[in-house]
Length: 144
Image (tube, rainbow, N blue to C red; front, top):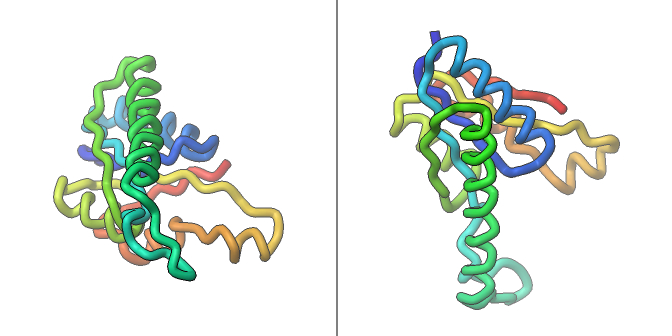
């Protein structure tokens, strides 16, 4: 039985579907919910071709991820669920796995949307396959 669920949430339609699936699992197993949003990188670093983002741009980027996290927590609260939330910074797969270890999660829940072409899959990447390989616990991938 899953007692501690970690939901990696990005605000997408697939993420919202995964959020609802995790809340149903939590109800069924009386599990604790921990919601995370992962800001992929610190923007004050050089990203490509010598481009450096300002601290104002980084603050705006962070605010967007905080809003996604707040939205997810609000959606859960509207369904009658209590959850803790946390904004993580860095590589999504590494940060989600590290958080799962730290909170002793039994299950990671993540949303996934199929891409229609190999170019879209290659360009956008996906954390789901890498997460399955690296996760310290079971992973539920909710497919949109």
